[in-house]
Amino acid sequence: MQSNCKGATLCFMNAYSKDLRVKVLDAVGRGVPRREVAELLGISLSTISRYVKLKASGRRIAPMPSPGRKAKILASPDHRGALWRQLEKNDTATLEEHCEMFERERGVSVSVATMSRAVRKLGWTFKKDRWHPPSAMSEGGALSGST
Figure 1 (cartoon, rainbow, N blue to C red):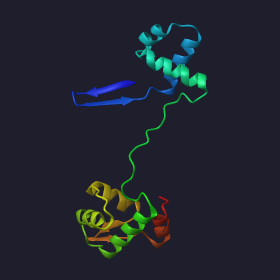
Figure 2 (figure 1 turned 60 degrees about the vertical axis):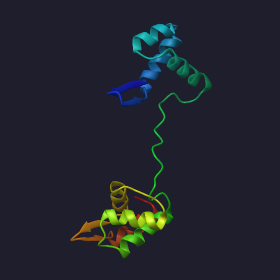
Figure 3 (figure 1 turned 30 degrees about the vertical axis):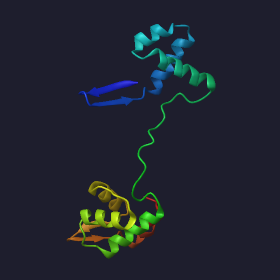
Figure 4 (figure 1 turned 135 degrees about the horizontal axis):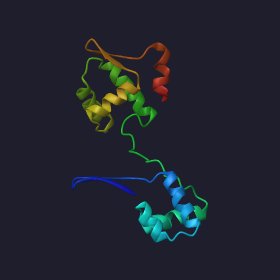
């Protein structure tokens, strides 16, 4: 894996591209020693072995997408409906107040930024000190989960 280390505390790893993986497998397939491929491309021997095993087993060699985090809010239709009703009942509340209400009622603690993204996903906007739902045309789509 490619390392993008910055400082002593943060270190992020990025998967090698499919192109590089194909080149590695091509070189190994042509008989180039693995140690030579590793030194030339700056990858480890274990990475090369892993790619060879993936190819031999017939599995895909492309990097897998990151699964990301599990959604805390809007993860279920129940949460979507609860937030929608909360916005309707408390259309003048701030995002901080909506976070507190959601935690009190649903037991799910979210940050102000997360609440803001969730409200926007539902199509609500904040105008003239008040939250406004989306137009009647898109209201059903926002609640049903299509964004």
